[in-house]
Image (tube, rainbow, N blue to C red; front, side):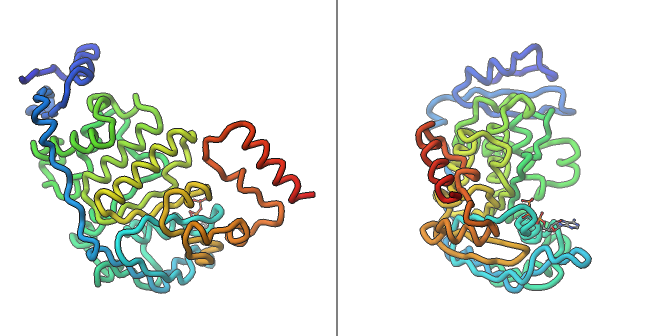
Amino acid sequence: MLIEVAYPRPRGGARRIAANASRIAYLQGAGGRYKTFEILSQKLVATRVRSPRLDVGDNMLVVEELTKTFGANTAVDRVTFSVDGPKMIGIIGRSGAGKSTFLRMMNRLTDASSGKLIFNGRNVLSLKGAERRAWQSDCAMIFQQFNLVPRMDVVSNVLHGTLGRQSTVATMFNLFAREDIHKAIDILERLGIAQHAAKRAEALSGGQQQRVAIARAVMQDPKIVLADEPIASLDPMNAQQVMQDLRRIHEEDGRMVIANLHTLDTARRYCDRIIGMRDGRMVFDGTPEQLTTGAARDIYGAGADFSEATTSTEIRSHDTVVETEIRAAEVRV
Ligand SMILES: Nc1ncnc2c1ncn2[C@@H]1O[C@H](COP(=O)(O)OP(=O)(O)OP(=O)(O)O)[C@@H](O)[C@H]1O
C-alpha cells in the first residue's frame, strides 16, 4: 500500500503513518515536494536481510610511532600498537591526553606529523583524493555531539551515511536509491528506533540522536567505527544503550570499534582491550582485568585519593554509591 504525504507534512500526518506502519519505506519525490511512505506487509519484515559479517582476517591495523605536534606541543607521541582482527577497543585518559587527535588522524581529519597507520597492508596516511575519501568511508566517525542535521528527518540523516559514494547531482538534490532507503530503515529497525524514522532529528532525545548517528555510521558499511566520547553527553541509562549498540555492531557485523571513553567502568564492561594515554603517550595497553585501580591511577596521573566512583556511569543503588564513597574516603584518611 502506498500513501503519499505532502511535504512539508500536514500536522504530524506522516508521523502518525510512521507510528502505525509495521515497516516504512521512504521515498523522496521530484524536487523534494513529496515524500512517500510505503507500508509493507509483515512478511517483508520477516525477510529483511542482515548486512553480512565482515571477514575477520580483513581487519589488521598497525599503528607505528604515530605522532602529531601542534607547534611545540606534542599531542600524540609515538603511539605504537597493532590490532589483529576486529576488536572493540577503548581509549582512556584525562582531558588533553591526545585521544581525539589520535582518532582524527586515524580517519584523516587531521594529518599526522610522522609515523605510519597501516590497515590491511596499506599506509592510510599517504592516501590522497578519492582513495582518502574511500578510507574515510571505511572508517566511520561518531562524535560526542551527534553531528546530525537537526531539521532533517531521521531517515534522511541515516541516508547521509551514503554521501561518500553518491554522485554530486544525487547529493545536491538529496536523491537516494530505493535500496539505500530500505537499508536505512532496516538499520533503524535493527537498532530499535524505526518508530522515529519520520521525525526530525532535533525532536529526539540525546540518546536517540546518538543511536541515529550510529545508524548513519553503519549505513556507510565501515570496517572501523571510531567513536569520540560517544556517551559523554548522555545520562547513564542512554549511555548504556549507546554502548550496547556499539558492542552489537562490533559483535554481529564484525566491525572494529575504537571508542574514546571517559569512564573506566564503561571501558571495562564493553571493550576487549583498553589503551591508556597520558600526555600524548600510550602508557597502558591491556585487557579490562589488567586495568586495576592502580593502573588507572597511573593513566590519570592521580594520587592515592583517586576514586573510580567519580568516573562511573553505572546505574547503581544509593547504598552502593554510599559504600563506594565511604571506601574512597577511607583511602584518603
Ligand atoms: N587543532 C589544534 N591546535 C592546537 N592544539 C591542539 C589542537 N587540537 C588539539 N590540540 C592539543 O593537543 C592536545 C591533545 O588534545 P586532544 O583533544 O587530542 O585530547 P583529548 O584526550 O581528546 O582531550 P579531551 O578528552 O578533552 O577531548 C591538547 O594539548 C590540545 O590542546
